[in-house]
Length: 99
Picture 1 (cartoon, rainbow, N blue to C red):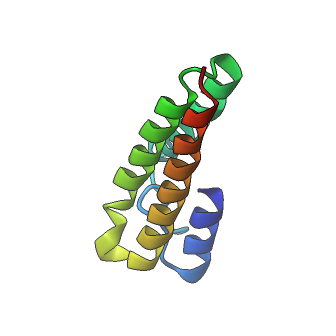
Picture 2: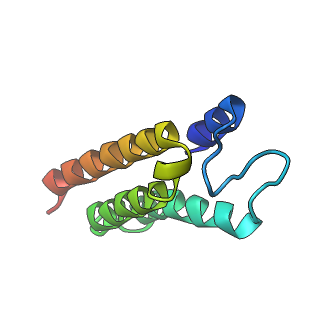
């Protein structure tokens, strides 16, 4: 998501949670994205039993965060949705390792 944000800002189509460089979004918006991305990592370190479920929830969270970007910057929204899909696929694969 950092790469998505930096790329979006570089091309002049920053995601809603980052905002343009002249008028950045509030810090709380960036913290929401950071929490969504960090939750599966912390869960894997804490309890691998819940990792697939938390990962799928994070993937849905990233997809929901992509929705406001569809009208303003559709290219960034597509990349965010691709990241969400990749996260969901990785989380689904974690079900194979559950006991």
